[in-house]
Image 1 (spheres, helix red, strand yellow):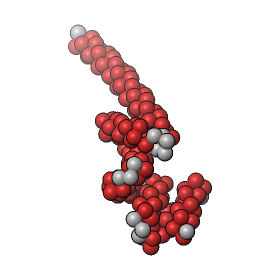
Image 2: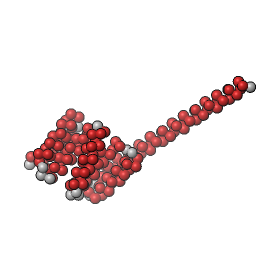
Image 3: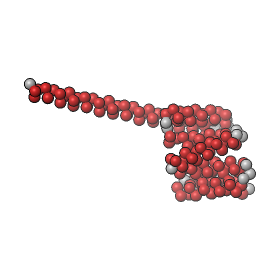
Image 4: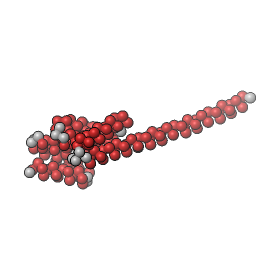
Length: 172
C-alpha cells in the first residue's frame, strides 16, 4: 500500500512538472512574440517618422511621440536612443532648437549607458548640427569629429557620410 501511494505521488509530481514546464514555455514564447510585434510596430513608426521629418515635421513628431510612448510602455530599450535622436531632429526641423538639444543630451546619456556606439555617433552628429545652428562652430566641429571617429572605427559608411556633410557645413 505504501509503495502504491509512493508511485502515485511520484507520477503526480512528474505530471505537474511536465505541465508547469509546458505552460512556462508557452508563456515565454508568447512574451517573445509580443515583444517582437511591439518592436516591429516601433520600427514602423520610426521609419515613418524619419521619412516625414522634412516634408511633414508635425506629423513626424506625432509618430515619434507615439513610438516613444510604446517604447516606454513595453520597455523596448533597444530602440529608445534612436527614437530620442529622431525626436530631436524633428524638433530641430520645427525650429525648436532647445527642445532638440534636450532630446540629444538624453539620447547621448542613454546611448553611453547602453554602449550603443552607432547612436553615440549619430547623437554627436546631431549635436554638431545643433551647435552649427547656434553659430558655435568650434563646439560643432568637436562633436562632428567625435562622430566621425566613432563611425570610422565601426566602418559605418552612412554615419561617416553624415559626419562629412556636417564638416562641410561647418567649414562653409
